[in-house]
Length: 313
Image 1 (cartoon, rainbow, N blue to C red):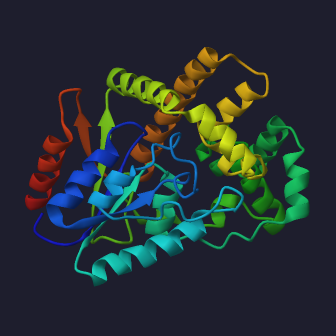
Image 2: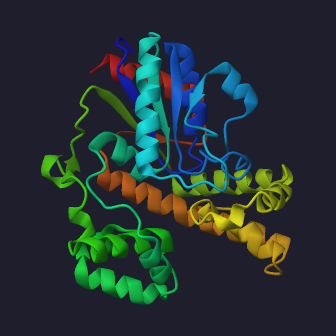
């Protein structure tokens, strides 16, 4: 990799992005900026596959453990912190590597946040008490573009979209900068062309096997106990953090819901569904150089591919 341009590594959960970014950072003198909407919370460790203390000693990581579980966090805060981190890394002659799976955060960092208004607490409470199908119906009528793009199973995002529409009288899709205006070859062109962008992908069979192994390991490592501790610290009051995969299923289990074995299987199912949505989003929303990995591909071999691809550009 002959230059020091910022590198972006994106893709679905459990594809091995973190291990690849870690090795790449060691090879080129880089530091990692986490692009993960849940790793920002202190204490959400096991369920978010947060980098270990050993990994963070090997390579410096940024935008991890920046808020308590009782505090709000959004894309605007991420962009501020990520840009500060990027500038700091560059000032020390090192290479920024953005790595993660939160598409909205990548998009906000690359394209800007637009001019959506701040939350209105009274309206937010009203929307939170409304059935999700009603909100989706309103969204479909008033902003079909957002309706088609949004994760319709995520109440938090649906509520925010409807909130913006009601506050402004305009479609939510118009509140952001017009990403589609810069399309090239069917993909939005980054307004930061001096970036090297990679997408990590695996076959469904391989990815689902990795997801199953990761979920099993999380429960063995103490996900239930970690969740109980987080509940004592106020996790349940944070609507955003409560969306974290694994934790919300464990909370249901602790409240008298499914058995532990049923909960483990449910987390695997929800994670597979999430990974499919991530893959679709990244394929359609970002212009990435995709690396299709197989079970035999090691992180070392992927880093070599990245170095070769960059040298050839």
